[in-house]
Image 1 (cartoon, rainbow, N blue to C red):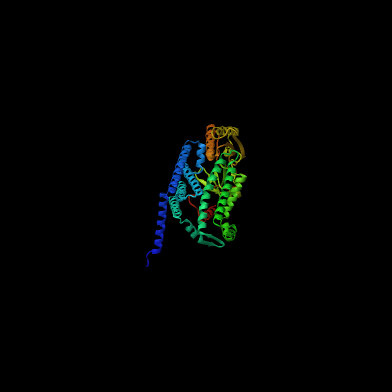
Image 2 (tube, helix red, strand yellow; image 1 turned 90 degrees about the vertical axis):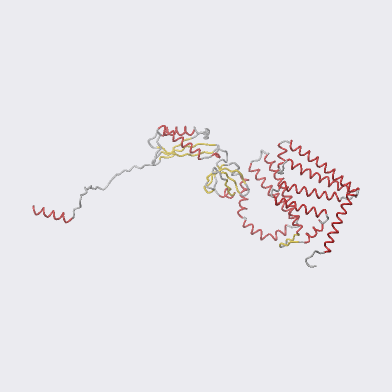
Length: 465
C-alpha cells in the first residue's frame, strides 16, 4: 500500500517492546529483582549520606580547601552533588560485579547504572556549559544513549555506525570512530583544563618563581596537554600519524604560510618569557604608534601579544614580534624608579645660582618626587635667547602618570621664579648695522614738477642774467 507504514516492521517493533516490558515485569516480581532493588536502594542511601557529609565539610572547610574546589569551577554544593553521583555509580558497579560472581541476573542494576551515568553527564554539563542550546543538546544525547542501552539497541546501533565510513585521502574513519573521538576529546580536554588550573594555583604559591617563569611553564604545560589530548583522540578514532602526515602535508603547507605571523608571535612570546626583557608590571615606552600613547605598563603577557595599559584608559594589545624586532624602552627593568628630565630656560639677566636653588626647592615640594635620589638642576647650554637648564627628578610610581609630575614641577618653578624676580625669557633678536650705503632723504613736493617746466625756468633765468 503506497505511502503507508510497513506492517511487518510495525509488528516487529511491537513484539520487541512487548518483550522488553514483559522482561521488566518479571524482574520486578521475581525475588532476584527484589535483591537488585535492595542493592540499588542501599547504594543510593549510602551515596546520599556521603554527599551530605562532603557538603557539610565543604561549607565549613578552610579557605585553602575551598580554593581547591574552585579549581573545577564548581560551588561546594555542586561538588558534593557530583561526588555523590560518582560514589553511587561506584557502588552500583561493585554490586553488578558481585552479583555476576554469584550468577544472579543484573537487568535492573544495569539499567540503573546506565541511568546514573547519564545523570552524571547531564549534571556535569549543566554546571559547566552556560549555553542553553548546548546543555539541552547534551541532555538529548544522554536520553538517546540511555534509551538505546536500556532496550538493548546499543550494539546494533554501534555496528551500523561502524559500517559507515568517511574517506579523506588516505585517512579512513567510521562515523562511530569520529563520534568516539569527539567524546574522548571533550572529556580529556575538560580534565586537562582542571589539571592546568590546579598546576597554575600550585605555581602561584611558589615564591621561588617569577611571573615570567610561571607564565612560561603554564604555556608549555598547556600546549603539551592539548597536544596529548589531540593525539589520544586521533588514536581513539583509528587515525595513524603516518596517514595524517601524507594527507595533511599540502594542507599543512598552506596553513603554515597563512599562520606565519602567528608562529612568529608565538616564538617571540616564548623568547620574551625566557629572556625576560619585559615582565608583568614593567613600565615601557614606545613610539607613538599604538593608540597615540607613548608609554604604558605591562598587565599580562601571552604567547601572541602583550597587554599594555595606558593612562588614556585603553588596553593595547601589542604583538610579541614588536618587542623582539623593534626598539622598546623598559623604564622599570631593574627597579621601579624612573628619572624625568624637565627642561626650562631663564633670561641672561637673571641670577643663575638663585634660579637653580629655587628650581630644586620647587621640585622638593612635590610629594611624588623622591628625596633619594635627590633632584638635580644642571645648566645645559647658552642658547640664543635663554640660558637652558634641566631639572632632573626621580619618581617610583610611573603608573600614576609622568606628564602630571612634569606639569606640577613646571608650575612650582613658575610660581617660585615669579615670586623671586627670576625672568623666564622669550625669544628676542638684536639687530646690529656695521656699514651702510650713504643715502639722502628728499622732501616730498606737494605737486610733481614736470621736466619741461624745470628746463623752461632755467632758460628764463639765464636770459634775464
